[in-house]
Amino acid sequence: MGKGGRILCIVTPYALTIASLICIIIVGLGCTNSSSDTLNDLYFFRANIQNMTSTSTNSSKVSEALSKAGVTVSDGDISSALEQVQKQFNLSDFYDIGLWGYCSGNITKNDYEVTECSKPKSEFWFNPVQVWGLEETGLENGLPSGLRKSLNLYKNVSKWMFIAYIIAFVATIIELVVGVFAVCSRWGSCVTTLVSGVAFLFTAAASVTATAMFATVTGAFNENLKNYGMHGSMGKNIYVATWLAVAFSLGAALFWMLSTCCCSGRSPYNHKNKATRGITAEKAPYTYEPLGPQGTPNTSYPPPPPPAQNRTNAYEPFRHV
View 1 (spheres, rainbow, N blue to C red):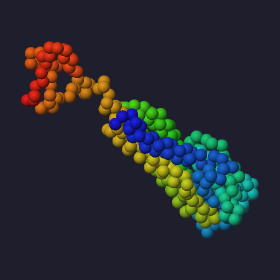
View 2: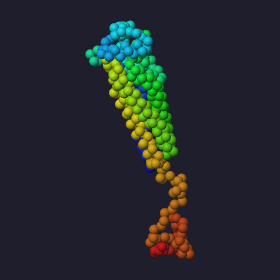
View 3: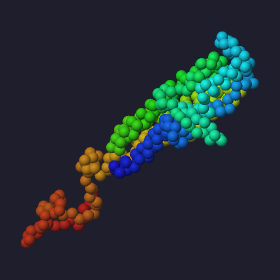
View 4: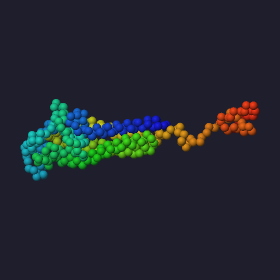
């Protein structure tokens, strides 16, 4: 198979690599533009605090936690603090968390309308204590221990998740660049296969980390804050995008590997090929062959024309092998 077949063999993994890169870009664009409804629907986690209330069926545990932290307040003081947070800091109805930042907005008849988004920041993690102003009300140490542990885990793991996505993005771009050289030879396919393996590993690692981490955060959020009318949920579209990136990256890696052992770019009709150099066709038996003047076979082809008057050449009826 020649260059044309080699190109056809490379088209499939190249297209899968492009698809994986697009999905990774979609994940990164989530929660970055408040005016785009499509991008606003790309979030890892959503905190719905529209129905946040100052009363709780579990107020005694919160009071106990505050007492251990050195803050002496009653249930009425906690209720007043929550009301003060809502009035003083003008909290939004919901907060969406993405890879680079978060977006917030209001809920009108079950319609989530984003009003603003934070500036993109590397290694971003959403700190509700700072965003919601809890540190100024004395409620920072009053958060349930399970929620605080989940927030600390989210803070540490989110940095690794961000780095993994960046490496996956860069490796996928390098895979596209190196993949051009795979058209020329199998060595190019070999190098591209190695790069695609790195891209797949980090894409899968980032996707697994994001899914597991935000599933933990969602469970802790609902378990500890549901008594205050707050609810957390995981997004859908962004997880579809990130796992599609994993699937496309895996398919590209497999097809790049396949291209290293098939679809050679060297033409079988290349006359410079040493394997075909010097090969001559064998003469079939029982064929006529001109003889020389002394009855020896004439090795020149085509045979020279016979003399005009004195014709000494003769033809052997059969050549026996």
